[in-house]
Length: 114
Length: 115
Image 1 (tube, each protein chain N blue to C red):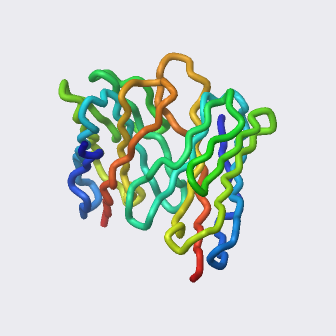
Image 2: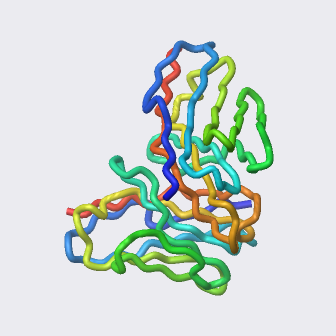
């Protein structure tokens, strides 16, 4: 069974641009969560989608948005990029939402904003 | 607001040593606690998941304990090997109230096992 895949793996953008990251969950998984990892703040929750609905959102500005498609694939978008958005963006999938099961993480997309 | 702290931030040990990583959390109303491993430039691999009603979980050379009332968890690694070198992250999930996967992470302990 293939794991969680994220594309692209690496990305370089300049301030003010926007970016879209993609996450394909494990087949059959319906919940996708996104996290931002930086050296200073560690791993912080961005949002979670389940069956195309956003179920929870972290404390990030409105420039960060996401969506989930009917096949459970998810995208996150960051508009008007800032230098501080440079980070490793991780997505995680699980079969359901809120039950006692582990989440499976993808390898991440490393975003560098210049 | 839940806060998760991991001590120490970094640890270097010789191969073969038994070691303990610590994790503490401020809000005891947790649903479960997970320990993850992260290799440089990679995603997270789940090691152990402990439900709030459980006291410990074991997998091979790893044993994780949970004391929910005191807000503490430990990850015990027996007979450490160079391949155990990685960053170990502790994460808690808030008491389930409607189905959210939000995890609150500590900043991790970077472990180096020297041959």
